[in-house]
Image (cartoon, rainbow, N blue to C red):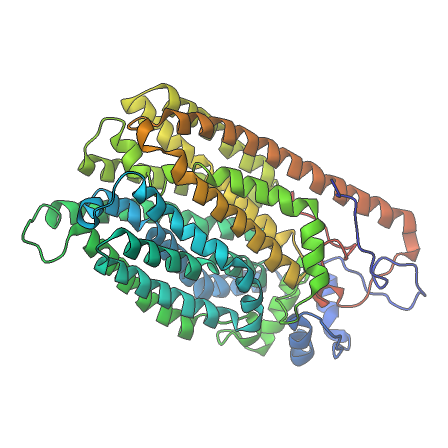
Length: 527
């Protein structure tokens, strides 16, 4: 591994003349003292936070714990509902095909053999193909506006699926649906790092990711209602699966348009923060050593992302963990039906998986936030998932169903990876690049996923279940390696700083110079 590779910037951690008394420790005294410095400094390629700092001039009053809590509540109130709503919709929209699978889509469109597998997986080809353009577009255009356009268009695309009557039409719509959803994960990583400190990010990621569980529950009950009231009426103008696509698609369009007018592109233009509160927020996130983003694209950051071993440790987990992802998405209902239940029963029986995910995600991410031991809590979620995978492979009916539910501990890994990409990857271009590589790994895993469930292996799909057991074990090992690398890097930097003693100096406002985590020797990784 290239774990010890670092890029040494001259201004930070270097032995230079004793001309600065600035400390990078984020203590109360430091925060109050910030307002005394001359902030009007400009550096090419610096983060937008530096321009905002020049504009606000720093805070003019003490910023204590109570003021911080009030500011967090204001941010949570304005940011989290929209973040959660859109993430809820992106999950239920891409998995709507699973509900369609038990409400008659195969019969209505004439799907044969493994054609449904391709309808499920083509989504991820679209997502994969649009990842590299997304890297640049997220920087070129205002973040919230770009997301709004994508959300609105994918809502239109989903609604159009109700008009599909053959295999090729479904493929085309699912491909474009994937392309339009490609921006969501990288954008959500950016939003989280803009608005929250490292200590706050893990829990917030856990909250907005846990809505996937809520989406599973809502989707199951919604599809059950459609199946029992519309699907059984042979004279209905629309089939059950068409109603599902239309309702979810039109709802997404409404939310996408609302996102344009409500969600700020960054803290710098947030209408719910006045000048003083913007200055306070900058001091809140100063300890992230990341800023709020820049439109300057840096090829050096791309190169660093590609050569940093952590990028590929993230990517391996995301790739491997998403190979079994069909048990919760496209094949969830089919898998439960194969345990010996009816179509309608399978729609209801998949919903407890969502409840289990919510409890696991919020509980474990809260524990991770309080102890600052993210990876240990993440591994704790993998253990019941491994046991559940074994139960699915070796039992039937109720024990197998219980095993299906306990695999809901695996998404804690996804929230942990997203949280680590938000807090442990610095440099605007590097952060987007690492996030997009992770999304590429996610799409490749999901492309493979439906094809592990071959029609000839139904209804138990034993080969797929055995592969799930092996994959979950490998994912757990990967998490242990991640923690070892982070801990090693932190200790090395602490030792280097201690060795320099009084000669160690930092540049003022270095947190907002858009340095990467390897360039900035003051950066410390969350474990």
